[in-house]
Amino acid sequence: MRTIIALGTMCIAAAALGLVLMGGRGTAVATDAGATPGGIAVELCDGKTTVQVAENTAPSREQGQRIADELMTKWKANNPGTDWIDDEKTRHALVPPADNSDLVGRPQGQTYGRISKEDVLVWQRETLAMVARGSQVFHSAQELGGTVGVSCDMCHPNAANTHPETYPKYQVQLGRTVLLRDMINWCIQHPVRGAKLAEDDPRMRALEAYILSARKGTPLNYGRR
Image (cartoon, rainbow, N blue to C red):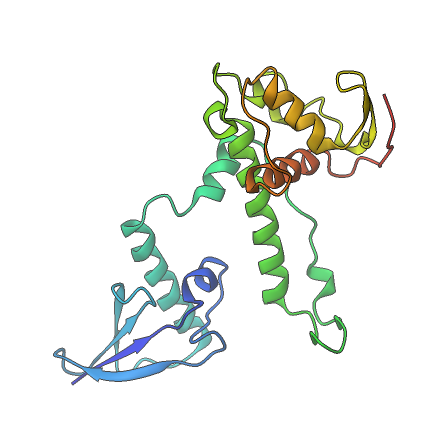
């Protein structure tokens, strides 16, 4: 009789981070099914991707990692485009976020407990994902809603000469003191010839994240011309 072990809800994101999470917190759900005698089919949470494992396999973390890696390799092969963050890093010079690994083991307050390695990995990946999304928008006239083919990078390669650390400041083009997002919208409306973005538009938030990331380490100096 074959045994199927299904990796739980967080398995795709967890394996992509190099974690072995089953059922979200180290548990697994096992059921009996079908036909391959003496074998175990470990199933990803998509309900389709499986890896065959011998029943006498030693249950170690190393073995679990190998299984998770094989599952993710199969899943990515069947779902092209899932490595879009790495693809964006290859195409454009993305500045990595801060390394918070020194915080592992420290308390985050009574509500949240201690900071784990998993916490740090999630923070890093989610932050980088927003920056990578901003890079996609920054380099695409279509994403910006432009009508003449102009994108931000044509005047500001790799977010050069944007100086987000100087905002808020008086901007001559607008005739008032503005925030970075106001200047982004001015550029979208004028050289890009698109419609302004709402402040809570995911593209605006991602653009701000990308532009700020490019100036990592630069001291704040608001009002600087």
